[in-house]
Image 1: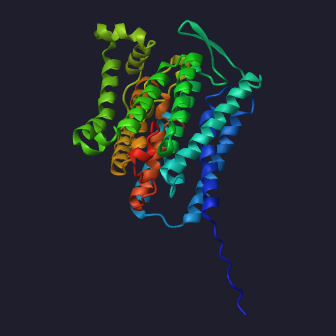
Image 2: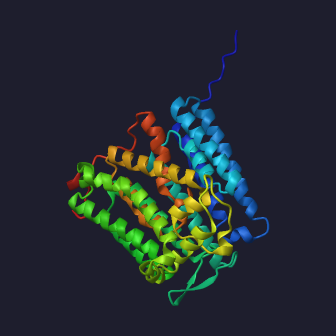
Image 3: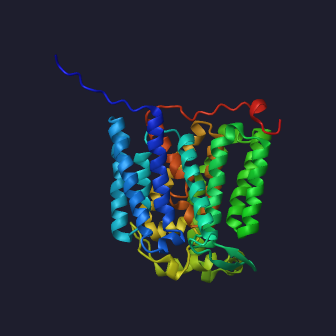
Length: 392
């Protein structure tokens, strides 16, 4: 009698666990370098361990699914090739992390992926902050806007505010369909708390835009205008190139424009550093290696892409944002569209939001990429105004 071959079946719940762990390890790898844990002897090794664990789960992802559509697979490998050149010429692994997320988020819908992403960020935020106040790592003091602010274990005082902002954006996206007025008020209080504790105006602006859009949509069905009117859709598609060229103009005309110089103080000397980077580093296809900690922070995501990652990265991010907008419009994903809109001002005044460890739009794009090619409708959101409005 012939022995029957055993068939190994991995259920949906096990796949979800693998995906959560993959995202969690990727986030630890990213945020480890932004905290004072990276300065503890041996602790920088933790990031690399998590990186290889994430790659192991990525390989397991391939083994489980076996079949992957050829066209999106080939294009995804194209991203890997671009990433390899970026790492070689500038040392930046920005595109490489996007490529890893692109392969790792195969066959999972955006809402679930962003839920895992947000949970991971919250756990990291709580752990690092608690470690700083318990004395495990340093909690530096900085003088900002005339008052003392703390870094909460992160190297830069703005970083904790950026991470908290991403957590709130992710929470609102995953809970938007059934968002209650109490949850909205908690989000409002968190926004005020971040500003009072940290003084981060970029977080205040980003979360204010989100809360305004959410309030108008939940009470007046406001986002329907973007789904109905082509003119508004065109404006959305033009936001990325407009803000990119506007940032480039400011950076290259700082010395010749009195208005820009006068606004520089209001923007906390951002325009000055934009100009410094524009003069010091030229435009290359795959970016330039530099140490931002030693020469000053470049607080503009569009210019970080251009000078740190290169012109090819700018084109890739343009495609990512255009695709994400198209997908959100096609699926009538109301909070998805609000989330994307919020990232434009966020990227204009901060450099961090372009990184995959901070950018929810990248996670959204990675899920949308596979979902569109497989003709799935996992994140289709049917909006019933009377049933879902948090004010009724």
